[in-house]
View (tube, helix red, strand yellow):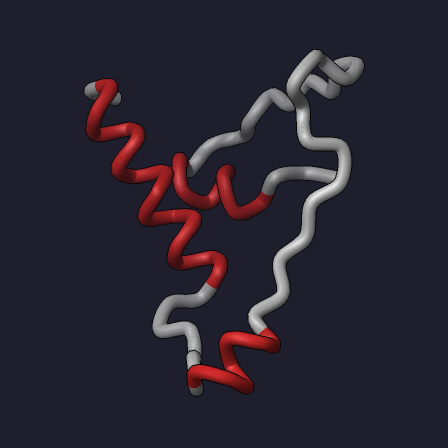
Length: 65
């Protein structure tokens, strides 16, 4: 599996290395906004792809890349 969102954000191929689990790693994670949508009327204003790209661009700006 290639990290296409990250590759698109940096406009080049990304070398991904899958390593064994490390102490403190999150083994299983999930997110579900169903309760927020139902109880609060929440609706995301930013797509996952756009949000991840914004995070990536902010990180790159902080390190001067």
